[in-house]
Image 1 (tube, helix red, strand yellow):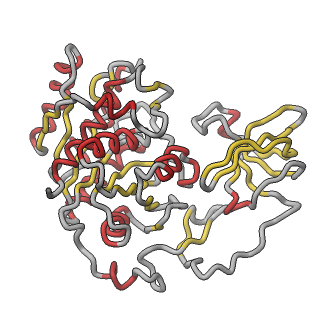
Image 2 (cartoon, helix red, strand yellow):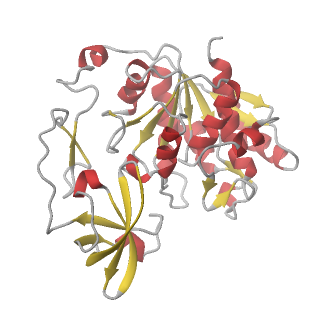
Length: 358
């Protein structure tokens, strides 16, 4: 349950779109905390703040943060912005938020999306982890630098899109045209109720040539076959296919992960694409050096019963990854420590680029 603390803001650190990192004195100790000013107001030095420190104390993957719940002495004024809608996200929690979804009645896009049923053959790259997003885009833009890419964020990881410094950096660099937050996630340029309507919004409202679907930062796993948030990658393949898109599966693979279930092709990819994804998709299989290549080929062979295995040369992709405008990191490993993982994601971007009309 929630572990509450009260403290005093002692310093303002870095900021990025939607988020503010601060230092808070709590019981004589300095704690790094994150505030979302749209929810709590902007913190100032000297403010008393209420914090949620539960995940921080357990050492879980929150980036080492406590989270600001409120600034009791200086509550933000009620918003009367006309864009405030009627859709509740993070529903029935003490911090539920009201957003205007792209498809709701009253939205300027409601009529456009009311009967929309197709994304018109748009390539949709699906990945398990948020860390794949910049690598997918690196592979995409290496081949098609002028295409328009939109990130459709699932709610299996972080709910606020503002948590992602990656998204902020990709937007600043012009690599992302927009972010659509779906399900319970929020804070994107567009809000959508489902991945299906999020894909439709990406195509018809944000003008995407290519969409990338992945959860937000963070990943829930239990070491069991079905108990991990990346199962939703398989559902995203189904959503893209039913809407007339061209789903492309990005494999989660590694020869650097110490856990056997993630060696070679991760069981997350095998389960999501092999068991959950009922629609056929293109599975991007990077051509890697031995002995990893043989391990990957054996791991993905069962996927060929339903999907198309697309062998992808990786020449030039490492250079594209090194030119990425944001740091590359997965499970604490950077590009040099887990090159194969990032090459696999970039290979999916290369496949998507090849599906675009010339």
